[in-house]
Image 1 (cartoon, one colour):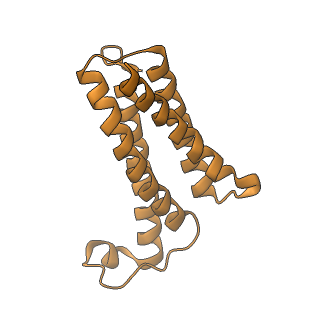
Image 2: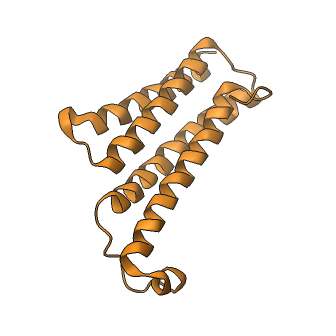
Length: 136
């Protein structure tokens, strides 16, 4: 990832990039559905976009909620020098889960509860980091 940065913090940066991508997807869908005047205006009228755009917005909102929790764990862990194989594993699971969640949600796949499974993988990731912090 980013060689001078601990992996757990690199995941934070890549998660921000994922969030930006989701924002671009739903912003583009909104402008495509509503027109550029709507896009540069006050947007008093809600978007009528359907499909991947609104799903990307919901995926972004979900990512924001979970990214806040992840950041609240990895930043203090980094500041206190907690960097273990388990914190790296937790970061890996978080990133894999969040990428999978974004892809599955945006594309609209729903079989076998796959979106919830992807979300749970990410949650397990930050729970592992939490465990390492409280038991270190």
